[in-house]
Length: 565
Image 1 (tube, rainbow, N blue to C red):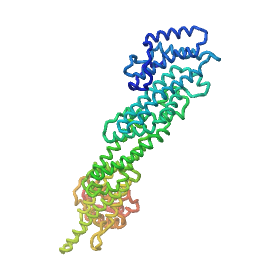
Image 2: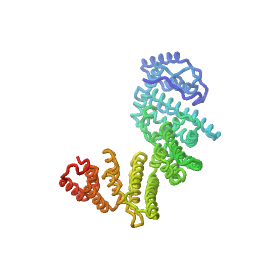
Image 3: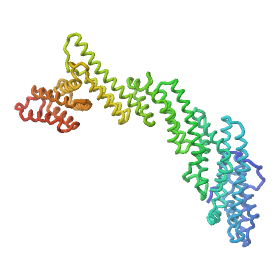
């Protein structure tokens, strides 16, 4: 079976000598069928020249004329089923006799020569004229149009040559260990046409891609068809047994020609394009605006790969873009005074922060500067909280007023800071380990930095005192809110380096609560101790658990502790 209808790529492709006058399709097919039927009945050999003249005049030339005239042709297919069967019968009949009358080699050589003549007489001359002409955008686009047209029509021609002489591939080629007609046809295009115009085609393709980047109209189908020639040409040196053009298009391509002759140059030009583009963006845009443009550019490059480049180019193309747009300017973008990361954190610009994280995550080590900036921001905010406390204590001292280690505002502000930063790490920075470490180290520095004045209470004392307020019922909380605040207090506890001091102070406060019967509930006390035990191990809470047990055993009045039940 064969698909006898073809669609030429464009009118005027493969233009050569004018169309010869010949019979219309119905008349031609009738004559062919009569001739083929007659020869099938004869026992005499079918002479080479007589049979070849029938095939060339009524087959090859008809196909070339249809490809030549395109829309001006009065026929939409070279031959119908009867015509094709007749031509194939003639071809097969010329090779079916063994010995000196087997014309297989001659037909193979003449078929190869016909494909070569199409390229040398019709395709190459026109493309060489075009490449010597103007080097403007329109000139480059015209070259792509003609190259694409010739490539498409040549594939059609090779397909039909293979179908007309398919028996050669099945017999003569297989027995002679030579290349199939399809493989020879592709090699001919490579050796006769491609090597002479590949540089100009590549340059024109990259120019078209840059016009696409600039927002100008580009024919994606045209670019894709021309780009696809490069990986197809890689098959020429790899396969000699391609049966059909359709099969060749489905074979896993060999990309050495695509990479060497097209992709390398594309990546080089892409690097230069975005190096220039990113400098312009940086001069005239804030960090959020710049990152939005970079994000759109990366999305556009992915779309270009899917539209007209080979899929293997995507990672390499994006890596080049990321290096020029992101890696080269990361420090500048993050540190911009009015729109860098510090400003975004201060202004709660969550969308912009998430975009910054998403983009710089693509760059090798790209998150380290962000994580360092985040740490410095948390450290600055935490230090401000402690400085405010220090200033308040100094003010009270100057006025001769007494100071207290009971400072709920400081702890609540620290809890609020930790809560907010923890949400950012989870929601904006995907719980990335670098940001978790940055938050932990920043709060460790804050909580382990005490006032330089000895008479001021340490941060550990303030934290334990606030915990006493919670467990002693001075802060009214529901059961669910109480569990939440205990979790948050434990997290602050973990940032403290002197946990032995914390344990000693906590034990003192627990004893006071139990003796004064002012604990909010034994359940809450046990819950807090269990949290410490989980984090620090059983030895850390042995004394605390013993105090609770002693209190429970020795409690005579069931109402001695509020809400004990």
